[in-house]
Length: 323
Image 1 (cartoon, rainbow, N blue to C red):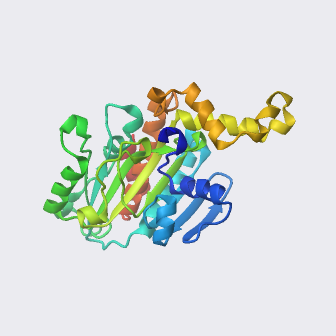
Image 2 (cartoon, rainbow, N blue to C red):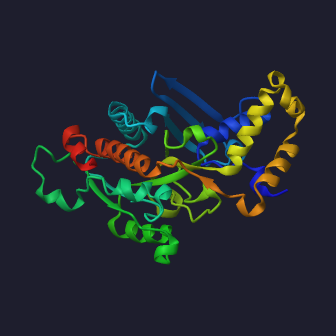
């Protein structure tokens, strides 16, 4: 059977845990989950703590924080500011940086492909200050960190692996931390552009769409790496599988689909292969208004990073950089 239809790929640790729990029908040992929610936002913290959990989840050991807000799909300025604040708080709590730290922000992705342009667009909204450190007034020093940013492009544009470019920069400027921003792939269409994931495990660009590149991690760079990502695409095969699952779940109430009540996983994969032939197995789907959505979510991600990195700059000053 084609692996594309056997395995639902996702970059979200939350979804990997959900799928694994559904498969084994019990909590996964070594995976600790904590959830908090209000009317607008759900925050889920997933800690992968053991090598066995790492193997079963397909996610590196570490902390994954997911902020979900369905309202992010709509032009909702108060909600966007709320997510910025939450992102800033979670990011600040994930790292322990000295006031004089230097941080490198890396916007991963292809700026010529809108669903993959989150990293470069967010990077353009980062308040960079490494070149201004000697010019800062005494009252700002200590609350405005040394920040630099780059959008290195992708292999097809530069002819160089992104990890190679970042390794060269890190070896020269020697930052205390690297923050990598990237577009992700989700297993649920409901999480596209509505979810922000932070992870202290670094990132393997393209893994969610089956195009895994060299890792940007503490092991490869020699400095801690925080990954911030937002799902911008979902696999077409995932949407097809969700449709079949929905029909199966409601088979008892819909006489026309009673025969689907006992469909096995093998049968569902067979049906999807007939609808989506092998050449379309990796077809990715993104919202039609993706241009606006990427611009909005890039501002949210950049705003959260700016607030976390520059605690002495008030929000109104940061806000000017986001538009």
